[in-house]
Picture 1 (cartoon, rainbow, N blue to C red):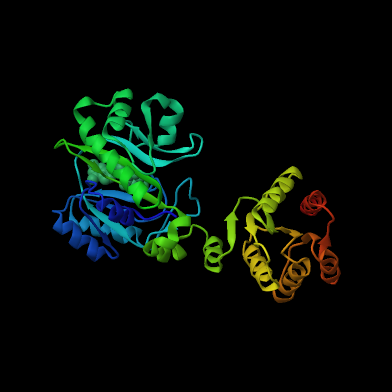
Picture 2: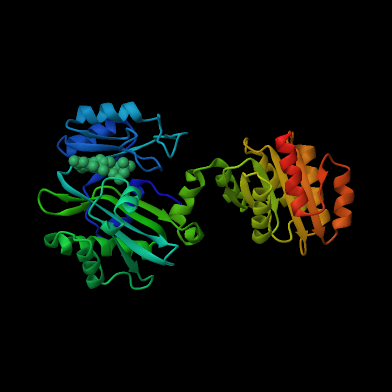
Length: 383
Ligand code: GDP
Ligand code: MN
């Protein structure tokens, strides 16, 4: 789960990460007062859960409290859009930070590197811009330092990593200290990402985190009540948020076939078969083992909330889950909801016979195998 910059700063402050002072404002008046306090020279930053706010027009360097208030008024309540986020996100707050005099910009990211199968600290002297671009053009300019999940980083490990990328020797000590603190925060706070871009070298020689991004591991939210409470309204996708509230394993994908299955493996196989048939799934949804009719109905509701869904494929292999219970849930959902899309169902295993009996009365398309079900979905969508 992504956190806002002001929340990320709260976390980093616990690890004494040096940052320019800043406060959150929810009105132009508040922004003005904060700017006044900092002497007028401030940066006003939209607090939205997306990167590239600068390019999207969500960050402004201001020189007077009036300017800070004006810019705040101009973005509050508005949607900030970027290439990655064409739909945009509404700005509800801004962060007013004391403006610092940046001489150089660096990049630091602590994250799980799935290819390397370890946590790594990625550090580059080419900060400020997209790290993806740096990675593509000059991969040798990025240090990858493994972060031990228990011990974090040793000073010498960071220093060595920084030396390898030719980081300026006079700032290796200060930079190493910054990287180690971020790694400590990453490990201790159940983070999946701690990113500082830019990490800024100031004209006074100090190094500060001029931006902060933290994501918390969703699986650790049960022991992070503060972030759990925030998670509900923070989800990128309202359907994912609703799924989280209902405790349903749901992941949004980018196709148009709604998928329901029992068991993660079976759902993945269903996604593969849909892809093989030339279509794309709109979601991953696991109704779970032993699902009852009520649960299945809830899952159906969830999938139907998605306007992109043009067909639904239900794939159930009954074990503990009883086919007839699933069938009941599906027919209940059909009776209750105004379903406008075709539904293809394949049910095998426990009580499959009874399930087919129940489903035959409803307006559904039956399939014997997953392949056949996927093929039928494909035919329906290409018709
Ligand atoms: P992002 O675009 O969402 O990553 O937002 P940032 O917080 O990183 O701000 C965008 C850019 O504004 C940064 O890359 C900096 O170049 C610049 N910036 C942010 N804060 C300051 C500051 O205090 N002083 C100066 N001179 N530039 C700043
Ligand atoms: Mn940034």
